[in-house]
Amino acid sequence: MANLKDIKRKISSVKNTEKTTRAMKLVSSAKLRRTEELAKRSRVYAEKLTSMIDEIALKIQSLGDSANSSVYFKNKENPKNIDIIFITADKGLCGGFNSQTLKRVNQLIDSLKADDVKIRLSAVGRKGIDYYKFNNIELSRKVIGLSAAPNYEDAASFISEISDEYASGKSDQIIMVHNGYVSMIAQKVKEDQVLPIDINRIEGKAKSDSELEIEPDDDNTLLDALVKRYVEYSMYYALLDSLAAEHAARMQAMDAATNNAKDMVKALSVKYNKARQEAITTELIEIISGMESMK
Amino acid sequence: MELMKLEIVTPEGVTYDADIKQVTLPGAEGEFGVLAGHATLVSLLKAGVITIETKDSKKLDVAINSGYVKVDESKVSCIVDGAVALTAGDNDIAKKIEEARNLLKSAQASDTAIAAAMGKVEHIGKSY
Image (cartoon, each protein chain N blue to C red):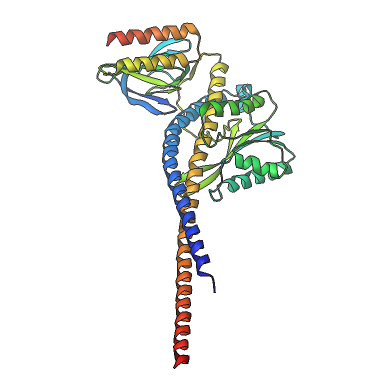
């Protein structure tokens, strides 16, 4: 028979855990609301920027050979060096959020390694950094703190180093992996090719018939600025998206933990009452048999 | 008069979205006005003031730091880094002007361009 005192202690400890997980859930849901709002607003901007790039890309493509003039749109047949950027959270306790991203990154590495591609990893977020450190895999860049509090300047300076190397030809492709927000109860790992900008995805879209004028008309000035902005913003948006997903995942995980704690308190209470009843019954039997023997 | 759609989008969201008569934009190669039916154009925008003539012929100014604009026959989309609207009849216009001034100061542009834009903002401030 379990000790009454032990059970009681256990109940109060589980109750405390429940309080903590519930508080964490509340915090996450408040943060989620804020981040979601931020992500929603910047989504409009991201969409506009993308559609503008698409339009220019289409024009360049329709001009034929000048498509080769810009490195940003040129898809290499056999990329030799690929940069992978992945975003994880700084903190745990959010279910499978981080491990899903890492799993996808590992899959990607395996499939690329099979094609004999050199890969460089750039990590955002403590969890991913710790994971690769533990597995002795080298990371070329790492940032902590950015995924918990995305900020445009830091995001831009992080990605611009990588995109500069792309522009100078040191790498052939930049892929970004992050766990994105779908809804309050769902996240989805997204894998995006940041550079080169994939022209194929734009094809089939309606385009305006009239001639496109570009100012300043040595079109590299505009294109460079636009692509730089696009890359930076992709990074920033991915961070926001990932943060929203992180909070949603944590909310879910903490909700489940709270429910589990509740169930456990219930089960323990039943056990406690049974043990108490047993103790009383034993005592009664002792008293009665004592009285009987005195007769 | 024919109307066209104008959208001003910043990273903080859509700042302006309405049908308008005419808009003047601070292009990187000089200011230019756009009416409905303009040929397709993509341009860099520098720090300056977007002047809008609204549907009911009111004037509206929006100070911006930098950005891009895409014009086609029926629509003008401005994608800017930061924008402050200076509306006539606004009670806290002084505050708005101050905001606009800070916004322009933060722009990464040549001093002359910023000075010109500042001058414009001051002028707008006085006219209200």
